[in-house]
Length: 399
Ligand code: NI
Image 1 (cartoon, rainbow, N blue to C red):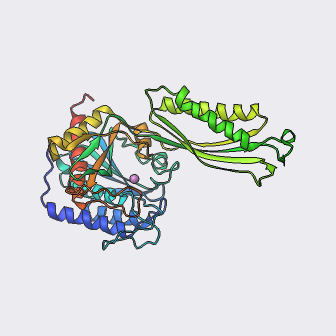
Image 2: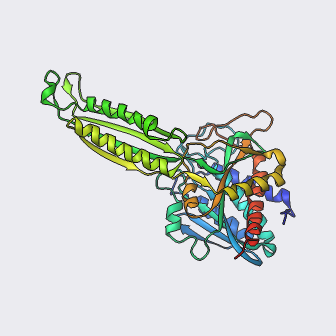
Image 3: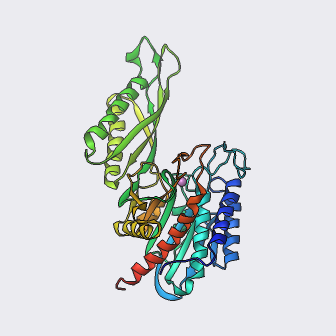
């Protein structure tokens, strides 16, 4: 079934006005109270049933199709970032120091719009469509997805496939980026405290120099990516911060290191993490220093199910043209949607939002980030059509 809106301009106006409203009133992770309320108001206005309060401000809307079938979920995030907006359009943030600099305002507005389109044709839908509005995507490693699932958001209505999109300034409006397998990486975070023994700089043998130990630890950590990881796989281990010591003529008692580990495959991640512990503990122990490790598992890699990535490709081609789909490289940025994909098959794709003629890029998480609003129509229609096509794919499967 090809979705054709009866009143496309009015739908689009609603999506744009909602996006601008949300942009003007951004809220930080776990504080999306007003956003959640506005989403609920719109759903009510369109006659879409929902329940709310998952992981605090999360909302789940459910569109029951008129024909029996499976369940497809569509997801958007609602939170903004602690960034002071530097744009000068007439809907800049009114919440000082908070900004929708990752396009979640657009994601939420497009999902509401897609829900409206789907609800109008619900009698003809072979199955159920869930709209998932999640909080706290920017709050890694906590996030909002895990909490929503723990609170039973999908109880009695587990999705057979789940999809999400992200605005993408590296692609022009009208293009969609997708790939099979990993599309974003896992991002872990660590802190290490190396504890030596203080002493006078002139008597190193009486102390344990935490700076020399840290130096050995950092150098040895470099061998993980170069010697322990399969050269055909990707991994990054970065020590981004180091501090220690008190003055020029004292042996440093303590050094603190902080950094991050980025990988695509769970196997590579496990290997890097194992070697990280072994090297930090082993090198420190061999030099008679103590080591205390805090390792935070961040979002897992977002792993697209091949058949659902192919569905995104086909639907986008039918809707936006044969050459609209770009096979993109994965990025090592983190994404909470990876946790939904650990439980359910599905796909995550990128929606081109760069100005189509100039191709001007507005970087994500930047104070001047913006999306070209002509991307909102294809983004809204693509999400809705994807749900229809996925339900139809599923209805052809044996029960
Ligand atoms: Ni984002």
